[in-house]
Image (cartoon, rainbow, N blue to C red; front, top):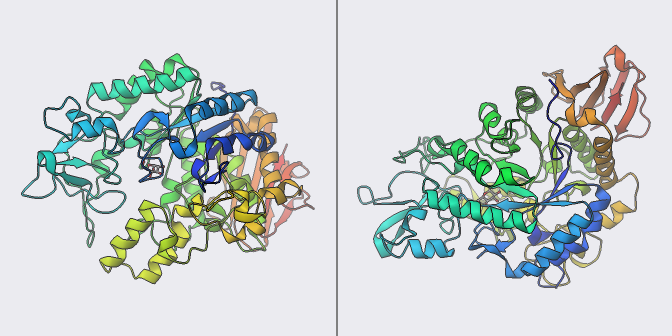
Length: 558
Ligand code: GLC
């Protein structure tokens, strides 16, 4: 059966982290007018949708993911008028805007929470998750994602509230129908304004198992794991179906759920092709591959067959049933060229292009995170004082002060995995502060901006930027890239990621060398003398035997 054709399946999304994108007024913080200045740059790249990380009013405990007013713009970013101008300017260029919807929790400075904490009989009390102490301690053993307990004691009523993230991010009680109505009304308000959809923050965590039982605790761990009682919880699909019925079904939107802990079976429900919930989800399996004893904090390199197995599972299991999103990077992940590629000066561009090819030729909606299209790298942070991210700073203290990880090792892990690697300013040019701000940037600029920047790459046809532009252009022109079936080849090969796509009587063969070794490959007969659609080396011919050079990527079409 022919699957449903949809614009959001055919789109490429670009994520903007506004704080670090472009500062227009010299306060060192990116802003909405800065985004407006760069819309033509994005148009030139060819993207269709901007996912805008939160721009709402926020005390910035977690850089905008702690919202104190969902219907106001963060002062540092501008005004609602600026927002409206940005929306209009984006639409004029045929670019849609997808907002970040952060509704698992609010800020503790949101008026709902300020009311809620006042008294046990406050009308807003039940908007949040309050519990009595258990045996004089926290109500259960859950740890928060940002270190410490997931419970905070509140003196006013002598009770604890739940916060899966920072203590300034109290969890909303989605079992309360009024909370759901408030959220749906707020979403409708933005959609009426003309925004085009939502990326839903940690949406897999909104429904908690009643009773909130203690979580499993690993040997030596300080806290229990809440996942079994929070992730893909009992009513999450009911609530999302209700959201679809009450709000989304009335508009033409793009929706993507951030769903930590999602399996393919769960994804089939979240992102089913009948569009009863969301359009697609972000899976975490690819990023969890290099996790270990201390969650993500280590220097582990992924084993390519494992990475291929993850993609293969998602590509094949969801085929014809649900839609995939495709991403390497976002504001929570280190830079992919430093993680799965090679950021040495010799191989950075080649491996950035290879990774782009590998992802963009798969089936699903691709997401590009700001700077990825330049092959921006991880950052040589020198001391803990240079970090701004609450997760990184708290983890540093928790692990080093409890003598679990030595400070020098923890610094190495942060340099490799910290979210701040993605959050340093966008590198626009070789001038002061990479052209990001005339003031003092809120977080340091990666010193490699003199070499790696948009201006240099725009002017050079073989740059990473132009390579991304070509990948997007290919997708626009060729339905096989959007709708073709995926087939993994050579699953066990430790260096080569090779797969085919099939659509009608057309076929694609995608070859990606994830290593710096030269590998002689035999290609299937039918592809000999196929058309080379794109490659990151110049002199490629499609013979029976291909020598794939370091980080080489080739796409053949027949
Ligand atoms: C999501 C966001 C992350 C944030 C967290 C809490 O994972 O992507 O940046 O810290 O949710 O809102």
